[in-house]
Each structure stands twice: as C-alpha cells, then as structure tokens.
Image 1 (cartoon, rainbow over the protein chains, first blue to last red):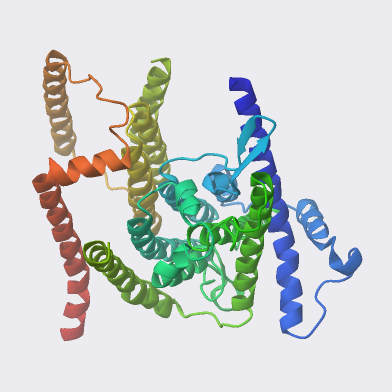
Image 2: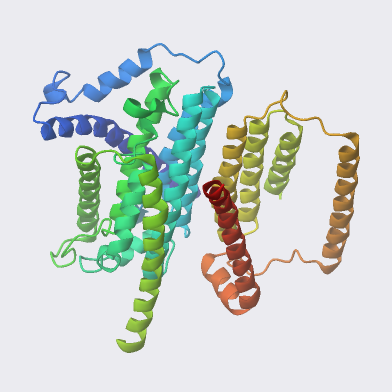
Length: 346
Length: 168
C-alpha cells in the first residue's frame, strides 16, 4: 500500500512536471506566433513544420552559449538566483487539482499531487519565496543596474502580493475552505463557478497575477529598452534561460490557478447530464481544464501585444491606491452580502 | 523524535551561522534558512497554519525587507563602524540576562508538563480560527489594534519626511 501510494504520486509528479515544462516551452513559441499574428506577419516558421521545433532550437542555443560570470560577482549566490527562481516556479503546481478521481479496476487515483488543506497558503508561500531568486540574482551580479532592477522587481512583487492575498480572502469567505481541491470540487457544473460570485475579486487577482509574472503591462523588472534590463542584466546562456523559463512556468501556473479558483477548474457545463461514466467525466474534465488554462495563457499574450508598459509610479499607484482599497471593499461587500443572504433568503 | 533532533540541530547551526558570518547579506540568508527550519518544527508540532504563516510572513515578507535594506545600504566589513568595548560588554550582559530568563521559563514549563499535546487537529485553520474568535477574542482584537497602530505609525513616519521637504 505504502509503496504503491508513493509510486502513484511519483508518476503523477513526473507527469505534472513534464507537462509543465512542455507547456512552458511551447508558450515561448505560442507567444511569438501570436505576436506574428497580431502584427500581421508569420512568426518563426523555419524550424520544423510551422516552427514546431523552434523551442528546441532556442533551448539548444541557450545551452551552447558561452557562460559568463562577471569578475566581481558573488559566485554561489549568482548561481543560486536562477536556481531558486526555477525551483519555486516548478513546485507551485503541486497543490493544483488537475481532475477528479480516476478509477482503474478497484484503484482510485486522485489527479492532484498533494491535497494540502492549506493549499492556497502554500501557493502564497511559494510566490513569496520566488522573490529571493530575483533579489539574489540582482545583488550577486555586483552591478548597480542589476541591483536597482532587482529592487524594482521585488517591490513590485511584494506590493501586488498584498492585493492578491486580499482578493483571495474574499474568495475564501465564499468557499469556506483553504484547500484548492475543495474549492474546485464546489464549483460543479456552470452556475456554481466562483467567477459569478467574485467578479471583482477575479479582476483584482488577475491583475496581480500579471504583475507577479512580470508580464506586460507590468514588465518593468525586465524592460531592456528604457531601464537597462533588470535583475538579469549580467546573466547569459542557460542562467538567463532559466529566468525566462521560470516566467513562462509562472504564467502557466497562474493560469491554472485562475482557472481552478474562479472558472471551475475541471468542471464543465452539463457534466452530469450527458450520461457519461465517472472516468469519462474525469478525462473530459482534464481536457476542459487545460483548454481553460490555454485560454488564459492566450489572454496573457493578447494583453502583451495590446497594452503599453506602465510607468513605475503608475504601477505603484495602481497597486497601492487602487487595487488594495478595491480588494478591501470587496471583502466588506462579500461579508455584507453573505450575511444578508443568510439572514433573509435562507 | 529523531527528525526533531535533526531539525533542531539545523536550526541551531544556521542560527549560529547567522551570527558568525561576516557578510550581512549571508547573515540574512542564514536567518531565512533558520526560519525555514522553524516552519518544519511547527509542522512537527501539528501547527500547520502557524507553519504556513511563519513561512509567508517571516520568510517571505519580513526577511525580504531585511534583504532590501541591506542591499541598498551595501554594508561590508570595511564600512562597518567598530563598536566600542562598552557596547560589547553591555551586549554580553544583556545576552546572559536573556539566557537566565529563558532557563527560568523552561524550568517552569517542565514542572507544568506543558508539552502534552491536545488532539492532533488543533493546529488546523478551522479549529484555530474558532478558538481565536471565541475563547481568545479580546487578546486577538487587542493585538490586531496593536498591529494597526504600528502600521499607521510606520506610514506616518514615512510621510513626515516629504512634508518637511515641501515646506522647507
């Protein structure tokens, strides 16, 4: 029993890990293809059919590039920076439920690596840890611009974490559970999705997710054109690749989180009215979940080619003077509505 | 129990490294690892919520701010002012007093046998929340007012400087 359990979880971990990496890899291609589509050009189409091998070429290029560690850099921390960034990006997907239970013979397999009862808090812990990768990388480079970039990135990340946490609290007041598995299981069908009860919370959460992933319009941590890059100015070859890659993984995980917390995760409309067996519902659910995730990833890219970058003071004003008060108002509103519904409509 | 001793060893080891390392940024990083071992201690004590909060607040927020300040100040061996002997002696005496206080407190603990663990779900969010909002409501509210006061005070301190600049 014990070994079977460990083996089952191990296989699941490997699958989740591989899927995460592959999706992150092809997000880079998708990004350039979508950029091409939006700007009325082809995008990469030389490597393989329609550019399908482009991510592999990019990866190979990163591996074979010369690796430069600046002379004045603090070597152990310089290496630790991108390592921490990629590790924290990879472990955050552990608590996301990918589907319902799969029954094979008399064995029930849960499609979730770890159903921790404080899953939401776990995610926040991992996000908080991700800041260290950026800060250490920037500081260890021993370059003023890297240091300023790191501090810019870290203060952005910390500022938006607060609004993100507050928007989640309103969601928790509705779901009454900190376990992501429970939160998704509550959103059966279509009308029970949390987006219908927490539209404002979702908007705040999504804005903060953009900021946490350093995506446009919040990509000041890594803007090459105006601010001399950012925390990764001194990085080259695969270390730079790891920073970029961790960003794409973060984008995938936050898309999965948005889909799971607000858009019903693996639940889809009429899931119990089609007369399908449990296993089929689970399999379709997983596919639906990934479609939702891809939808959000597309949205991330769509916004990138639509909105210009914010100025730094605008970014801070939006975070502290708009999103945090809005999130607090959302909490109060949620509380009042919950009490009114419980008092008068039940 | 062996896990406890191993993690306790790690805690003490990294705590000592925090003190003895010369580079302030290394010092903060060792402190972060020390807090990580504390998180493991909380999990071993069935206090999951406390573990998560310790992880998020101490490791994720407070230590990042420490790192922030240290990186901006760019302290190092050369620029660190030498402390006078008087300060060192005062530090030793204060540390000794702390040890005596701790020893006294721990002796008291042993005689009361406070290590008896309640039921194992006591540390879950639900149970902790219920206890905080029923049995310990007043201390809980008072401590939140304390935190709020500190927050307002911090904002006020940060605000004052710009106001002086504007008028002067």
